[in-house]
Image 1 (tube, rainbow, N blue to C red):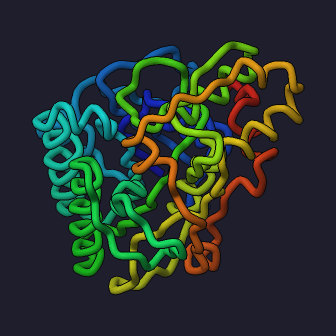
Image 2 (tube, rainbow, N blue to C red):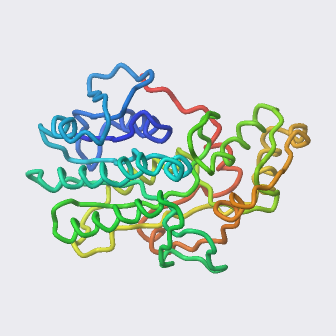
Length: 319
């Protein structure tokens, strides 16, 4: 089993690498090669199954070399975050759209249709969501990032219809807790709040205490990505895009869960200075029903307490 992860040095990518190395198999076959593609790599486990490819997904020649010996499963995670893609349109266009289209085209030419798990986003829905939101809601992206994600979903579904690529797209919510560093994510406040509270540091949240967002830990996200790759028997005309189940939580509910785990003292250090645009795009999200995704075995963290534990508990290191 040869597995490729694009964006493998990213926040979710590194945890996915670790989980796949630990479990050692995918789709009931041992993983013999785990190919990692990113522009750079930080410290990684010393494992003979790893094959590192340094460079941009936007380099077709590099991608051809990566895929030259064939591929069975691809996790396509690389992307320019929404805030950065909005500010630097050419970069977002090249990475989030053109490079993704090139990947799909090269996968289409493989001898056997590979399984492709694509990390899409709830950004495809845009803002002004209905009070009763469900997974069948029509996409109306209001950022270039969401528009490009939707375009790639569309091509993925067409190639699945043609039986060229066995594609599966998952619309991801806010994934926590990302490292506290500049990352171009407009939703970074969700992770920053968790880190600040756990460390007992002061933090000014850019949305108000009653603002509601869709949450998922990286650990839960990785489990869902792997579950998507494991799905069998999907007909060519099966709908290939799933809205993952999410926890819809207010900042106050998350703070309560943090207080239960770390104590009440740090709560006094958390302030609020709402940004109207952030509040509209990322923190006015209604409950989201996902019966189709749940029936397929996808899940969320289960509770605010589980979210906090899963997001902040140190991840086991691969040896």
